[in-house]
Image (cartoon, rainbow, N blue to C red):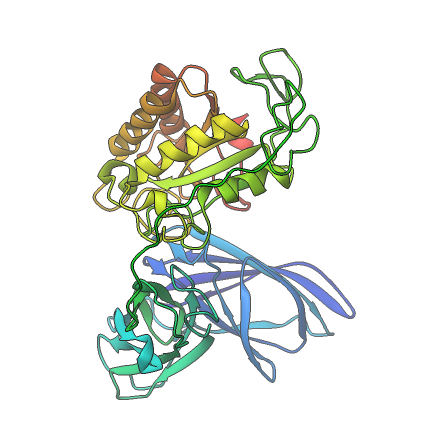
Amino acid sequence: MTNAESIFADLDINLRSSWSSGLVADLTLTAEQQLTGWTIEIEYDGDIVNIWNARIISRIGNRYVIESLAYNGSVAEGATTGFGFQGNGSSTQITPITINGAAFGQDSTDPTPAPMVSVTDAIASEDDGSITFTLTLSTAATEDIVVNYQTLAGSAVVSSDFVAADAQVVIGAGQTSANVTIQLVNDVAPETTEAFQLQLLSAQGAEIADGVATGTITDAEVAPPPADPVVSLSNTSAIEGDPGGAMTTPSPAGSLIADGPLSTAGNQIVDVNGNAVQIRAVNWFGAENDVRAPHGLWQRPMTDMMDQMLAEGFNAIRLPFSVENILDNQVATSVGGDPSLAGLTTLEIFDRIVAYAEDIGIKIILDAHRITQGNGAEGIWYSGAFDEQDWIDAWQLLGNRYGDSSAVIGADLLNEPHLGTWGTGARNDWATAAELAGNAVLDVAPNWLILVEGIGNYNGNNYWWGGAASGCA
């Protein structure tokens, strides 16, 4: 094993195995300070043919630049994250060069901080042909800063409203800003104001302070007045007693979960009749971030998507949320594909989803995906202005609201609590917190299943976030 240090993090490199023509290496990153995204440069005289928990963004000769993924870019001070790769070649030498632009081997007491890069919101008319975001540095750097970015669709749709981008921009040495220009698609169809996001993925030589900006696209065309509504009826048929008869495409036979509380029997989940249940759930992201509602509603009606989930053979929906969005309960955005949801708050949209789930027989598992509004996993149940009690209050609010629903069957207490410990008695003791929150949920929703994910590291053994459940036994 080799170890390298920098002002940002320590990197341990362990050769899990090696042979005459290749190797498998595990790398563990320990943050010396809070990381909001990391980029590591290494030298390796071989071909990396497989990599996990990270991605390669460039290679020049034997020098690779590797960056974090969305779920492991945020690393708290003192916490760890891991990645690894398989390489082909005779060399077993892996040499760390930089992390976030700081050289490994640099004195950890170096007082010079890396500059912080931020991106600001932008607005343009589709008639302009493009929209420009500005990236700014907190201080000028002595070397070029290379920032990787991508666009994320919202109510604005790729190809129809803007041209997707996944590229990089350079803030030159001595400069404090640079622009990213995204091409817009102009059409003659009247549209409402739409939006998409520009996300900074990594910054070589800098740290990301504010990495997400919203691009707002206005439209010059004026929509004609709406036509009078028209109601039409068509013939249909169904087999008497068939719960799927009202659906356009019935779900596969036997896929629905019977109404009534679920419970566990050994390593099985069983229904109210004692039959083993296989939960086939689809994740419907969105209500944990700044749109405050499940994604896709900017394009299609809620009922249309839920019918498709059932038709594809899913019998449950994992419905993520953030504690912030539940407690604040603000009006959702990006629901233009379902006019019936316009002006509704997060909880009011959840009410509609739960009610329709009851109608079609699909079940729902609520998931506290984040504490604060955003993307990815925070890994802890207290964050920003929200403490542990806020997290529990949000769960009790949901339990009181949906505890009697035949559709809602469970509570995933926290997505990937990888920054937690197990049985330590510390503030981040996930065992204590999960028991406290689980009992609070059962007080108001006694029929729900309580789902407790694992932590990221147990007794020094790393695993994927949410997967280290050894301490839970």
